Amino acid sequence: MMKKEIFAIALLIGIFAITLLNVHKIDTLKNELIELLSKSEECVQSGDWDGATEFAEKAMDHWNNANPYTHIFIRHQEIDGMTECFFNLLQEIYKEDSAGVQAAFPKVAMRIENIAHMEHLTIGTVF
Image (tube, helix red, strand yellow):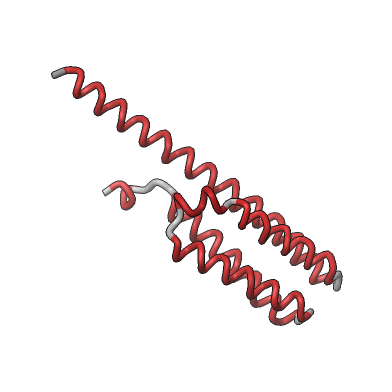
């Protein structure tokens, strides 16, 4: 009977460790995306549309390259919403519409922050 309890405890510890690893991975992805988007936003503010395009496209590529991971651990509705935000941002950058870009950046950043926040371990996510 003791073997069952030890196995159950080991399983719970393993699940907890995997959850912490997931939180770290999502936070790292969030920070990398925010950094690229901040550089793109700085380029927009200085009128460097080529630089803004380059950094926004790098951020979108980085998001897309994370697909094998995100499609397992993040709800598909969130993935679709994030991708849509990226496309809206890129559309405004391609049009070189400063007002549209300034409105799109916070939406993308907020979506990234929300995804990361949902993945954090809280009492609500346990029960």
